[in-house]
Amino acid sequence: MQFNWRRGLVISVGLSILVALILVWKTIDLQALSNLGLAESGFLALAGAMILAAIAIEGLRITLVANAMGGKIGWLKGCTIFLSCTFAQLVTPMGLGEIPAVAYLYNKNGLRLGLSLAAAILRSFITKLVFSLGVILLFVFARGRMQFGPVTGELFTLVALVFAATLLLNAAYVLFPELLEKIFAKLPRRWRKGKFGQWQQRLEVEASEFSVGMKIIWARGPWTLLRIVMLSLVFWLLWFGMLPVLARGLGVVADPVFLASSQFVLTLALPFIPVPGASGALELAMAAMYKGVMPKAVLGLFILCWRLFTYYLLLVLGAISALGSLWGKPRQREIVVESHAN
View 1 (tube, rainbow, N blue to C red):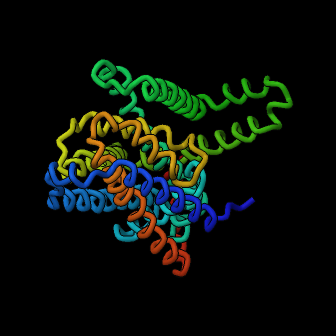
View 2 (tube, rainbow, N blue to C red):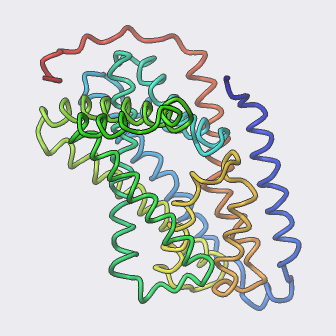
View 3 (cartoon, rainbow, N blue to C red):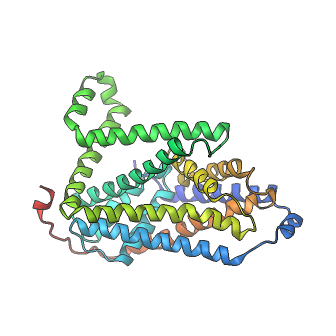
């Protein structure tokens, strides 16, 4: 059944605005705001520049992945693809529309259909690898310093373990596909025919497409893959780095490591929230997370500013890019040399 993106858009935007306004109404204190010396516009402008830089970097990463697999996509087109697939992610539950949107737009802009899906899955898998680095740093090396609190701490432990297990299972399917297939074949028949079986089939397809994409990328040399990974790392550093900049723009000096790490934990949990864009739930989670760090007078404004840059702005730009992508004419498909995948 095709997801109704218009309904998802209404739900996502409506919940986000409603919860954000309630938080601002419940927390804002005009007298306290004047005492804090709000606002420092230079830092707010810097946050805006950081989100634009992040868009540019992700556009470059999308371009590198596509062109390494035989496409001819320019940097500006890569940016529009990123914005369009971000729109698809924000209006679908648990971001399920992102990979199909990337694959469709890769194909529409000249990459062959089979390789379009492989490129989209490869990009997603590299993002997971970068996130796994963050999980290791927080869970293993910074656990003593980062006190997320009883609720969030347990959430981080659970989500981190699920994330790691899923990543290892994906890697095992790439490295040892026949072994995994034999294990799944021994499971009860009713399992293999239900939701678990559908998930297993999707995992098999993703592993197969990732293997194809990795062979093509690796054939061009490790430097190409390293550049793609580094661009992903820089993108997320900019993304989470906006938090302390926004706080400073609101007149609050807070621990940047805590702000970024806390949001990283919430980002890990987003795929488990069955609401488009995690709207409503994310705002409430941020309020609980930062209430002991941000003054009450600016807590609601801080959350609203974060969502303004990372949600509302991307939603508007993504909608414009998506409409332009749908109206544009497909490019002639590029001929890909099959030997690259062998």
